[in-house]
Length: 233
Image (tube, rainbow, N blue to C red; front, side, top):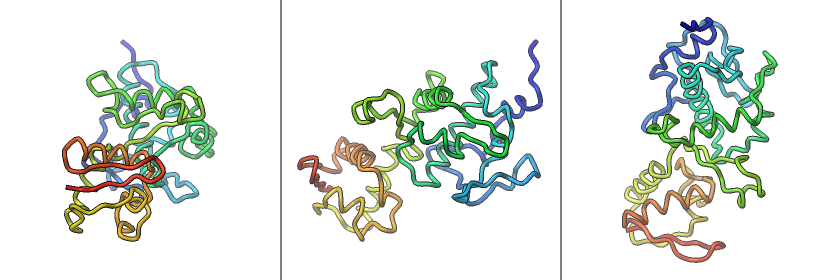
């Protein structure tokens, strides 16, 4: 029987509501959990992001060979990546940049997740739960839109397009925008949406979200790439 070291046992310990991101509920790092397993000060990035306790465990930065431990480690990395991107309002994550950032490099411990390991983690996030993955919480940006390189940039779905579609639809309902024509630019950058979470959104993420509404018969998108418009029903 294989026994885990204390560090890897911590990685495979059951996750709790305080550190798991789900489609309906995410945890903001602005409000550290009161259920932390450690009393050590948590690492804070220069941007003010508070990392979870597991970030300060050396084993977290080495992909584990044990299948069960690896799955738990992948879940914790997926949670961290999603929460980091939400905090920084990052919709596209460039792995070549991210591996040089505090997300994947713990300067205090001098531990780093390399580019190949980062790709493995995002690959897991891309997979469905049925296939043993992270529930499609990420999607690789096609090589043609990523400078010709495969698996270097990914959309991180801290909200999936379906979830963004609901946020947009709720705003349309609340502001009486039905049967109104708006440009995609207005939705993303207009004064009317400054208080909305989708304000400043990546344009491709907006279009993916609007396409969910189109398929549901709640919107129509028209126009060319330079000036797309949308009408809500």
